[in-house]
Each structure stands twice: as structure tokens, then as C-alpha cells.
Length: 371
Image (cartoon, rainbow, N blue to C red; front, side):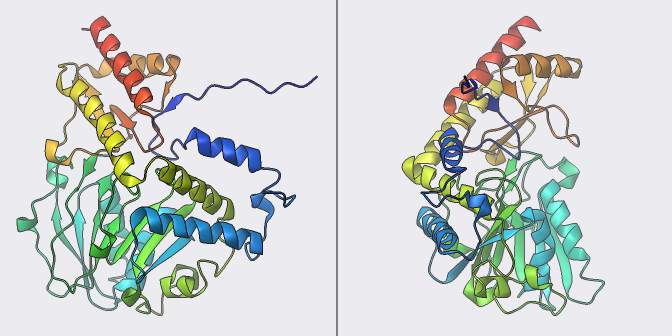
């Protein structure tokens, strides 16, 4: 006689791939073998079928509703994660001009490195307007210090640096003819944002949207049809827009799961509601760090990420013990990025307030027993 195995969802603070809402996973589990009476799993469907087109269309409609995306923007469900689009963006938008980049951390640096490859091909120039590297990426350079290019092809920045825990909350104020391109991989859908102020928003899915491998691109219509002849078809936003993101077989199951996450967010009350919960979680964790002499966070308070909270212990020799005991308590993936060290708690939308409360309780107990 078979029985359903018992399971327990543990508090997974991974930076990505990250936790998904339990309700979403349960629905995917229930529909895994047979989606709505079709006798097929979504994984088995043709992306050209009427059934799958309905899934894809609904996901886009729900995302547009959540983010209040204007009609003059295309929403693309593409592949490769955000890192592929570090290359795709200059191929689509540089157009022989100069692109401005703000360097606020590891992901900004990687985007700049990829974009600079195209300078050697004569496709345009890359200008780093400012960098916080000298301060170990603990803040955001003030806009008054930026060396901006007049009439730049675009301005690129990363809204939330996952590794260093730095978030830029204000949208840059630039000349109206310079499109703002923003990597929102680790903060998209965590709070409302005025999409109309951007030329393009892109985000890897594996933090707040769904499984790894999918990337969302939201791009204003007037920025299409600028791609270089060097741009591969699959990376050409105009071609993908005309093909409804299906120039080739898309990441169908990831797209479906993203759609379930969008519905879950709507059920939570939308982005204003989820922002309030995210603020509670972040405030609780940062207050615990601030009130302690045992834990430290190096980031400028004005730019502390609401999604990724790095912290160090006063005695780094206790790091391994901290992680081992946290694991025993069901608090997973708290090790900081190898380039930074210490700890990092990523508290994306699917991380409950209760899980953060469990983490804080453990941190306080660990401090009391290791002072």
C-alpha cells in the first residue's frame, strides 16, 4: 500500500535559484501529469498549441496588470537569464553611439565587461559614469558625480546588487531622450515601479519570478528595430517581439510557473501589499543586526537592499559553526557569496515573515551563546 511521503518546507534563503511560493508549487504538482483535462503535462505541450498559447497570454496579461505596463511596451519571455542580455542589450540598442553604465556592484561590473566587447567591433562606446568599487560597493555614487554622455544611446544600471546587498531606490533623472535600461533581476515585483520612466527593464526569473533559465524583457516600442547586423536572431528584441517570444521554442514550463507566481502575487493583494511585507521582513532583519555588536552590515543605510541582506560575524572563525547550526534549525543557504564572505539572507517575495522571524530568533540565540 503506497502512501504519500511526508515533507516539510524549510526556510531557503538562497539568492537564486530561490524559494517559490508553496501554493504555486502545490498547484504545479497537482497539474503536473494532466493540465486542465488535456491529458498532458505543460512540459509536453507544443508551444504552438492553443492550450499553451492560452497559458502564455494569461501570464503576460497578469504581469501587465501587476506592473501597470503601458500599451506601448512589449513584454518578452526569453531565455538565457539576465547575463545573456548583458550582451544582447548593446547589440540591440548601442547603434554606433555611446552607452552610459553605472557601476554599483558585481552584476553591474559583468554587464560593463560584456558591453565593452563591442567597442572592439566598432559598434559604439561604453562609458562608465561612476563606480563605487573603491568603497567595496557599499553605496551608490551620488548622481551629481556621474560623468554622463550627452545624447547617450542608453543609460544602464542594476537596481539591486544581489551579492553586495546594495539597492538603488530612486530612478535616475536624465535627459528625456536617453532611455534608461535597468537590470531588476533581484527586485522585480517586490514593490511598485513606474514602468513608463524606463526604456527597458529586464530580469532573470530565478529570484522573484520562477525557475532559472527564463528572463523577462519589458521594452518600449520605439527602441525596437535598432539592432546591429551582428545581433543574432534569438537575441534580437524586434524579431522576438514580432514572434511573441516564440522565434524558437521558449522555456515553456518556466513561463507557465511564472504565470502561476503572477497569479499568486495578485492573490496577495498586488505589489503594494507585497512591498509592505517585504519592508517588514527587511526592517526586522536589519534592526537585529543594528542592535547587535556581534553582527555587522557594511552597506550605507540609504542603500540597503530590501531583498538581499549580507552580514558578517564579529569573529569569522564562527562562520562554519553558525552555518551548521542554522542548517540544523532548517535555515538554509545563508552562506555569503564567495567574493564577499560572511552571510547573506535573501528575502524575496516567497520568503515568509515567519521564516525571517525564525532566522532572527536563531541569530539572537547564537549571539548569546558565543559572546
